[in-house]
Image (cartoon, rainbow, N blue to C red):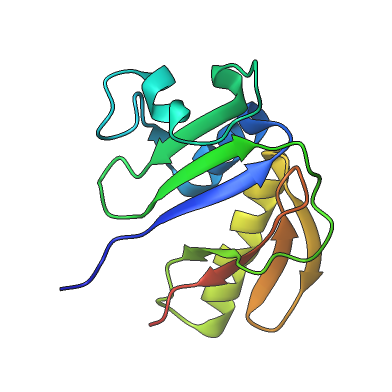
Length: 143
């Protein structure tokens, strides 16, 4: 049996990144996060800064229940190096290579409007950053 995974993203501004990743992935707020009666109880499982508020974290989920949950948590440390793990935002991979590339470019443009930044374009994907500089790729699903 396969195991399920959750992803956690550390940040400076949890609300900003939650809104960006909801737009990017089509996710919704998970309030309260699974297995918890209240949002406060949900966030208590993380070691959030003392005196923090609900704005210090967000739990997002795929509304269809397919993708992994995404926890976004404010931490006092700033990002200092390249991500060791990144997210791939995949568009449909059907059609010609030109069709796939046009969908990749259109998705990257949509994510720029949501607050992302294009870092570099490659032959088969576009490297981007979210509003806090966390790298991710826009690519096509395997055919």
